[in-house]
Length: 106
Image (cartoon, rainbow, N blue to C red):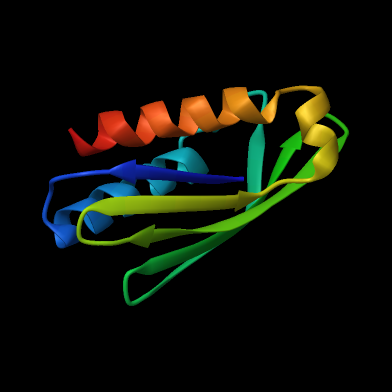
C-alpha cells in the first residue's frame, strides 16, 4: 500500500516529525490491545526503512515499509499481509495514513 502526501515544510523538519511519529507508534502502546515487538528503523539519506511485528492476542502481524521524504512530498509504502484487508479495507487504511501524515506536517 502506497500513500503520497504533499507538504511545504523543510525536508529536515519533515524527517524529524516522521521519525518522532514512528517512535510514538512503536513505543506509545504499552499495555494496550496491540503490542509492538522487534521494531527496527533506519534512515538512509531521505528514506526511513522500518519493520516491526504487531501482536494482538494470538495474531502476529509483520509490518514493514519505508517513508521517502522529498522536497515537496512524502511517500509512505507499507507491506501488510493480505488477510489484514479482511479486517480493515485498504482504502480506509490509506485514508487514515494520509490524514495522520497531513496532520503531522501542518
